[in-house]
Image 1 (tube, rainbow, N blue to C red):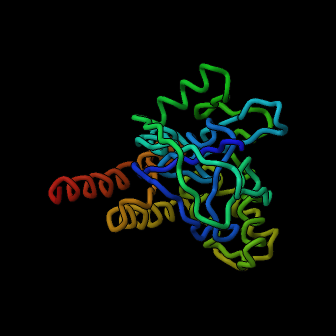
Image 2: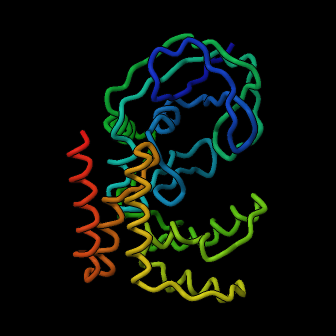
Amino acid sequence: MGKLYHGSLERGIKRLEPHKSTHGKYVYATPYKELAIIFSGRCGDDCTYALYRYNKDETWQMVERIPEAFNTMFSNSSSIYTLDDATFKDIHTGFAEVVSEVGVNTESEEFIENVYDNIKRLANEGKIKLYIYPNKPKEIPQDSSDLIDKQIKQNQRDNNPITKKSFERIVLLHPYLIDKVNQKMIELGLNVEPYQKDDLINLFSNAVIMQATNPNNEQYLKSILISISNTYPELLPILNKEYKAKEEKKRINS
């Protein structure tokens, strides 16, 4: 039987049970240990990084889309579990993953003290190629404007209407895309007010509140501050005030 790998924030797991996700209720695993390590990060999505390769003979390309994303995403420890592949099948999730509809016992566990350190080790070994912000390969626009069409396609796949709100997270994490988002909304025929730079203040304030009320749902506040300061430095004093108030409250409550 072949071996598969599953990365988790949780230690000491003896059996993995199926859980509800985008593709259904499954246990997920991969034949590539390097992917299991990457997937064991504490957060991450299309707005914060890209991970891809065009065929199995290529090196994985891993692109940091916003400043400090990798430090935030992979600042955790994790465990990499080895599994038997007997009950797994390929449903073409879009990554080199396979799934099991039934629970699977773990065969071994490897503890990783720092996920990002291991990712950098994989890069040094040539198993992945890292692009640290703002560096990007030629396939990805320097301003990450491909995220706009990605969001539209995601809404269409999920049968969700495309509204101004659909682009809030892109605008907040990538404020230099405001003009392109506004142009796209016109092309889509959305009869809405265009985004203005001052909208970033309310969006950031909401992100601060969300981070405080749900610490496990990472809002990338530090990355947002850097991105906005690079694009609209005049907003930084207002945003810093919000951020420092949140940090002080966290210090008092800790």
